[in-house]
Amino acid sequence: MWNNAGTAGLIMGLISTASMFIGQFLSTKGLSPVMTGISGFAVWVAETGGCIYMMYFFMKKFSSENPSADNAATFRMGMVTALLSALVYSGATFANMGYISADYYTEQYQLMFQQMNSILDSNSRAMLETMIDKMPQIAFFSNLIYCYLFGTIVSAALSRGIPAKDPFADYKPDEQ
Image (tube, rainbow, N blue to C red; front, side, top):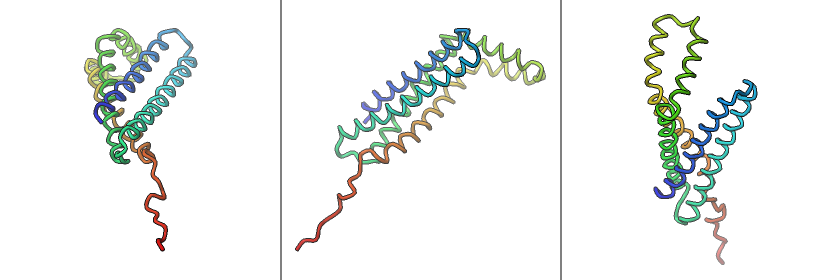
């Protein structure tokens, strides 16, 4: 189970990571805010749909490779996949925010501060500035929790039909 879940988690984590970098790239292309929003939404829909499909595909594959696997075993495989996928994506987010694209995020934070400057008092501004230094860690743990919970819910929903149940398995015709 761990081998199958590891492969699935790696692929799903890479899909989400690619989506993160594509969204980041599109936001730097100077598109209008409407086009940036539309393209970001399209990338999000493709990522979410792709991850749900890949979860279904790998759970179905696990079920077919293990004939003794029931719905509970398939659900456990989906949960492990969700955990490993969340680890891959959260690690990539941490690396991106802390090292790879740190300048990009610093620029985004400064832009946010400029827009919110009129509504922030000095204490709020100081608190936000100290929090910015911890944003890669905050993003890591929040993504880890969110992605794991999302994947667990998806695997719970999908595992109800994987493997398919035979409604006539317990049927025994009258013996005469």
